[in-house]
Image 1: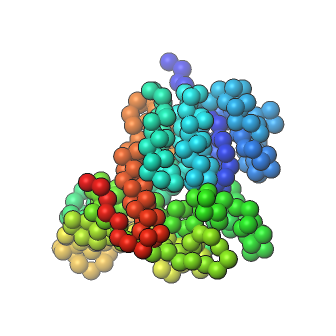
Image 2: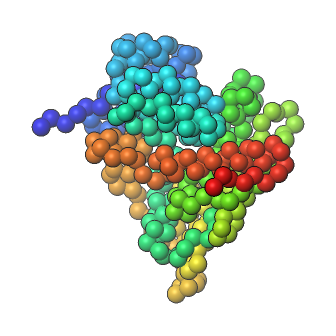
Length: 359
């Protein structure tokens, strides 16, 4: 039987990760890139050139893209505050939707996104760190009981800033970064900008994965207030669980980017359990482990993920073909808990008070 060729379109280029996701799609053997769309055509030029996308598949109007391209799957990369709006725009087409992180700007918006999806259409939230070899290895060890019951998760996440990188992580100059700030949604409060909303979901969502889906009791957060900016560039969040405390820190302005040279502190996770600890730092090919049997820290190799877990497009198509819902951080239940924690952190930072999660 001839296997299905998946028709994929990329709509809204607010987030530079669109270039990465389209490249993953183009690398799949049974995928056809049938269209890309953005209200600002200039933002599509780089992706169209690098991926060789024909001009008749480049659209300034998403409705025309949907009508002419007829995608099976739509990749969405809008500003954080626009995720709900764009899912509602695309959902009636019946296409399956992959939304680049974060889930949404609020829990209310996240729930509205789920509700907007028609029966038979799947929604997946992509957290790029789920595909990292070291973080998958760490989760495998946790799931196997290697360090007992998880008590604490620490996460430090960030980079030099969201405007330093174009498609495929192409680096910008300092002058380009500064000139882009006034017009960028990343630096606009009303559009869901700031390091907390950009990066906290990584820690809270993968942290929930490591915690086995457990929710905290309450959340306390503080953010910085950079001169001349309306959004934060640094946040520290403490989540209190019945079994212990976990800490999630976000930072725009690390000394280096973790995918080139790990800054100090290193970006990644440290997980402590009743029987040991695991450190898993972004993009490493290993994790470092302590256990009661072997308390001296030792390295365990983290092999590259194999199919279908090498990238979000491959995994999403695998789930669609198997008729099963995505699992792990990209799943709706885990992402929703991550969003709950983010919502509580936003409220805590605004009010200066600890915020309880509803039972």
